[in-house]
Image (cartoon, rainbow, N blue to C red):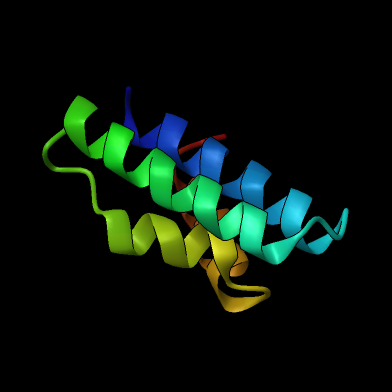
Length: 73
């Protein structure tokens, strides 16, 4: 997987959490589990950054949106 994939996953999780109002505990557990799997897939994967982007209400989402735009997505 590439950085673009990680950005899309984090953005989707963020939308489900904050726009659709899903259970925060369930979403946090999902993000933690995904972080482990994605780190195995790519040792350079930054779990902390991913978790921040997926779970933060405004700032994390805006940061990843800007990054997504910079990647041309």
